[in-house]
Length: 300
Length: 231
Image (cartoon, rainbow over all chains, first blue to last red; front, side):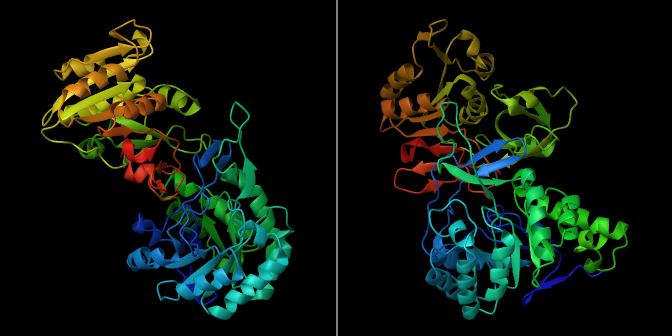
């Protein structure tokens, strides 16, 4: 079986990606990055950001809440310090970009027009910033406008990472498709918060984003809802901890998957997911991804 | 608790920690960072206090059990040569200082101060003695040694030394008090915090630098120069 998958102009060796924000820039674990489909970098903004106050992480049965607040060195330092390092990686590199205006998105794309950048993931779903992020992702009109503007500036692969927070992802996915995206990624973290004993917000950023195993049923629902109604591929993301979780997402209609929170527990998790997925395909004599992708609907 | 792992035991340095999956179940999901208290031969010693569900589950391990450990992680502590080092541990914070003292004792002049709420909360005193060091004790209730905070005798010791360095681990109030008391003497603190990944990919752990921005505790720490950060 051929495991390769093409999205936009990018050919991925297999359908497993390391999700943004949970794998740094892939440089800590090149042995993992080089054996999965690719990595999505931590979100990059135009200006450097120091991120949310501490604490930034909270654990609860079923998952975690985080509020990192897009801490990143900004596009200029990323270009100078991290991009040259990324050349050591052999895998596909998708840069997650988070603009706070349409102009910023264009500035980011223009500033990262390098061969090592295989594509972009538009972050229209980060719940931990005051403007931009999820506020863009909750408006189908903004999703379309941003995607369109970025599409005009680059012919690299364009993925739009969408949210499930108080908006029907089908609407925003259609908007991304209209705007010219090559794929949508569903879903980013969901709004959440935790309190301490005195009733104060636990997280320094007050609210955060829920991720981990508890997210999977909702993410799976979003993927199924969207996949059959748009023509561009869907990348499934949300609570994937095992190979079987990945198969569930493919069955629901996802063409690729992203492994996020699992990497925090085990930095090799994305590779383990890919290995388990590959083993499963061999065991079940899967000939083509088409046999699994979207099979749930076909069996209804 | 002792973990037998020859490769780990040869590589781990004072100040480093292990990130341990306390349960094979998805809950608790995240690993628990535990500092290394000592190394003997092929065994790594961990000393921790049961404070929550994670450490409670970890404490349930019995001899012969297999644990999922990621490490050694973090930057090793600086081993200063030919200096006067004041080692100050508060409560269970004495743990990582034992391994540190074993290293420091070979190349610097070391004095150890251990504090706790009361006598029963003091740990590893005998182990420090085995290194040939007589730790000065302080307890809040006076049940053993100096009656009061351990930072008092540390302060007195610091004053007698020329260019001393303090290396400390303990509860946050102790560290804050210590930095203020011995100022401008450098205080290297072993800082404990909630962590996500422990390997520098999630940007969840950190300490705020006094001149802005955050350090990633699991990468640039967990031993940091406390004079430069906000606790």
